[in-house]
Amino acid sequence: MTTTVTGQVFRLPDLGEGLTEAEIIDWKVAVGDVVEVDQIVLEVETAKAAVELPVPYAGTVLRLHAAAGTVLSVGEPLIEVGTADMTDPAAARYREEEQAGSGNVLIGYGTGHGTGTRRRRARPTARATETSAETTAVVAPATAPQPGPVTAPQPAAAVRHAPRVISPLVRKLARDHGLDLTAITPTGPRGVILRRDVEQAIATTAGKTAETAMDTTPKTGPETAPKTLSLEGERIPLRGLRRAVADKLTRSRTEIPDATTWVDVDATALLATKDELKRARPDLGIGLLAILARICMSGLRRFPELNSSVDVERAEIVRHGHVNLGFAAQTDRGLVVPVVRDAHLMTTAELAAELTRLTGLARAGRLPPAALTGGTFTLNNYGVFGVDGSTPIINHPEAALLGVGRIIDRPWVVDGAVVPRKITQLSFTFDHRVCDGGAAGGFLRYVADCVERPSVLLAHA
Image (cartoon, rainbow, N blue to C red; front, side):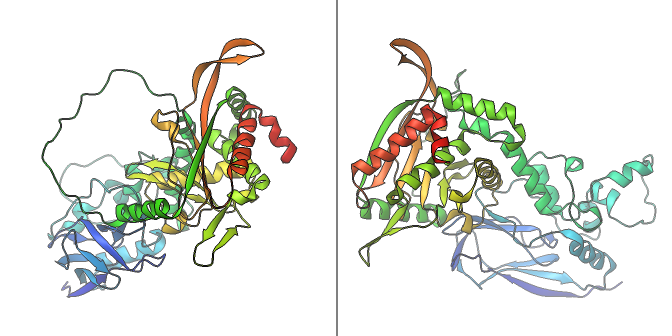
């Protein structure tokens, strides 16, 4: 049948959090490529994070309105797609499938760069060629037999239990994280696996590796081959996320008169407590980071001046009536600080679940900007880099930051005898405007006492 083609322009959408512009990092398609609804077509970078943008139209790419490196404002044109008339049975079928469960339009606040995106040139059979075997087996309607090798028909039971995945974006997300779709529980209509189902599986997988993230013992073994040192100079534009980080850290150093204090502590009992919780209630997934977060909540109740910020314009110290706990998470794109909101209201198990969820989203490149703002206190586990101590820059406009170094075996005096113990160094950086060394030292000493004797927490539960 005859299919009419009309050009539709996809413009830079409002990405939230007051963001008004974004820089094009990379185009995933070119003029002449065939795209589908929800297919990732480009990656942009804002002052908050990197964002993968899916196109809301299906058809052939007619024009790319801006090149990589261009900074665009919200509402400016990105890409023009020649869309097929929806009376085309194939296009109508895709729209029906999309409505059945492809999920949200924007998938992508995050830190990871998409890989493996294939470009497809327009051809008469592009739709049939690009349809995966999985989609054909599960959701495609019966078609006339095609010439070629004939495979044995699947048993009815196998077809019945095959995973229903409508969106190619959801399949790609699962594939990129090595997930078996048959092991994912669907929540969509008629048993369709949605994006949120894959994200939940990613977060669950991340939880299983949370302990690895807290294992601060440096790895040993043969060194990797050194990289060839390039002596060619270059200038790297300070844009997007990197520029926002630079501005924030510069402001912190300019405005905040910070000071740092530290102490070595015996974490042997803390590790034993973690192991006991893991044996008694493995379903709770409580790791060291969750216990340290719980200790911080208890400490901030005793020293509320450290959960504050300074309003320079009004010359006031603002003590917050809630704790939004930021924690440093290393991802493929760099260090990000997700925020656990109202952490002071959570149990240790609830803290563990939220830390696991946010860590999974961060590593999957799925953190929205709202999850990276609004913190009132930060916990930083820099021990994962194999270092003992640090004097980190405070996350403006917060007033304090607790750092935890690697946990290693060291000689320690216990009851007059030198014995091997699990030792770590705690450092505490604070804004000297909100308190003096007495309060900062008192908080750090309380945290240290809880690390050495976790039963101290019971007195303030």
